[in-house]
Image 1: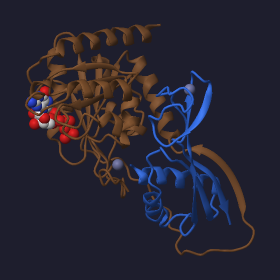
Image 2: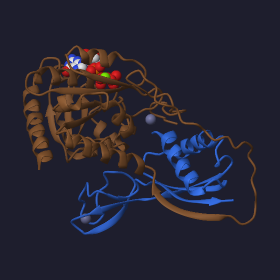
Image 3: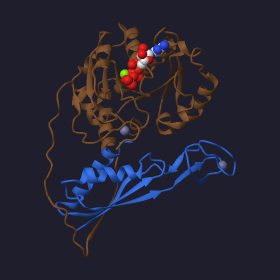
Image 4: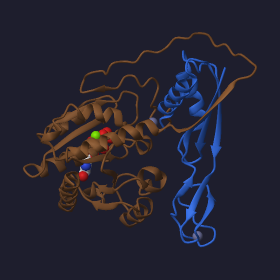
Length: 261
Length: 110
Ligand SMILES: Nc1nc2c(ncn2[C@@H]2O[C@H](COP(=O)(O)OP(=O)(O)OP(=O)(O)O)[C@@H](O)[C@H]2O)c(=O)[nH]1
Ligand SMILES: [Mg+2]
Ligand SMILES: [Zn+2]
Ligand SMILES: [Zn+2]
């Protein structure tokens, strides 16, 4: 059970692009009978993340062969993921072709907003599951014409806990921190921030109004996300977007080159 | 945390190892900084094992203490969180060596 987001019971209700994937049967072996006496111990020593990691590697190889740059965008609920992705795609129009896979617990609002940028979008309704996993992304990506794309952006479920443990096969993990949330988020959610390749401070336009302590936030990001490239921007006014888009174009060129090698 | 998803994977691996036999005990190894909450894991276990070969099995959780690495001292030191400093040289952010484990250690079959 998920304390942070109430995730988890069942998990059989994930829908991709409106279609429910084929359900899997359960064996029914009935009663709880406990025998005593000598049992056999089987040593396993296997990671519970192994299956997802394997599928993520498969995605990564597949995306690379398609010359795609793949982003996994994560943040708390409402930090501005959809707005940021929409703006990124809109400003790249005519330069790079962007497609989006978006995970949402219940609604298709984000998918509808993203489509207004004139880009292909596949929605994954995660139901009670609080994160996307590599298998869901593989199925969703299969619904896009990947040969017609340069950049695939995955909007993860708004949650700084669970998505940290699920590699999706992305090239870049992009974590957002909005000026309206606590400056100490990078210290409160270390696995997420530490695993990020890119950290973006969003909603810079309202930083002053909400009393955002920029120095503290940047210090915390430098500590918690010390592997990350840091950007500060407003998807609303466009301030700071240029530097981010240049970085993205550079990364895309590198990804395309790598796959040719 | 996604304890149900984690538990589903543990039960899947246990069933695979059991090959149709009943699982009597399932042993997990969970790092103290894995983010997994043991009470939530226990709750998830009851839900996930219902109607499976692991129904009614005992769940044992071995908690793994966290250990960080200091590159400057080339030494490990015990820690309780992600950002502790090396007790010798006060360097922060050396990186965790242990404490993030989410593993199935073994199963005991009938
Ligand atoms: N002022 C300002 N508001 C913004 C900015 N970016 C997003 N917002 C607002 O913040 C709210 C949440 O933005 P979304 O883009 O929906 O955030 P999200 O992270 O996708 O949210 P979830 O998918 O629900 O987790 C909306 O009301 C946006 O209009 C920004 O740069 N500046
Ligand atoms: Mg959104
Ligand atoms: Zn969760
Ligand atoms: Zn040291």
